Structures are given as structure tokens and as C-alpha cells.
Amino acid sequence: MSNIRITKQFSFETGHALYGYDGKCKNVHGHSYKLSVTVIGQPISDNSNVKFGMVIDFSDLKKSLRKKSLIFLTMQLSSIKTHRTLNWLPS
Image (cartoon, rainbow, N blue to C red; front, top):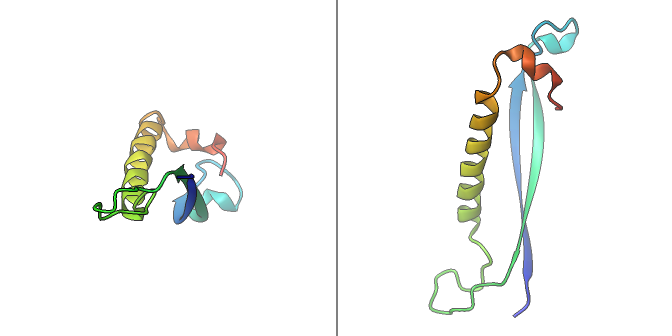
């Protein structure tokens, strides 16, 4: 059986302020992002499996992404000492 590619797009919002900045970004403001996640694999071929024909269940993909995102954000935020450090991060 050949591989199938599926893509799920996630949208999310973030907010921040640039401490010590003298422009508009010194105030709390937000950004909108879209993240596309593509999974490539062979569909489940066991027709007794409730997920028969799926490469991955979208709810499982969301759970996995949410868990990995929280781990990543926790690691990133724990390494930041002050908001001033955020000024160099790309938006």
C-alpha cells in the first residue's frame, strides 16, 4: 500500500509587549499564526480497527501537538529570565 499525506492546519494567537521599547510595540499587542502539520504514512489496513483507512486520527494529532507544544513552551519560558529577553525573539 502506498503512503498518504495528510495536512492539518492549526491557528493560534499570542500576545506580548516589548519591555523598554519606545515604539507602539511597548504596549501589549498580539499576533496571529497558522501552523500546518503534515503526516505521511500508510493507512491502517486492518479492517477490524476502528481507524481503518486512517494514517492518523486528527484528535490524536491535536493531542500530540498540544503536548509537544506545551513541553517546548515550558522549556523556552523557563530559560527566559525577564521579559526584556523576549525583545530579540523573532515574531
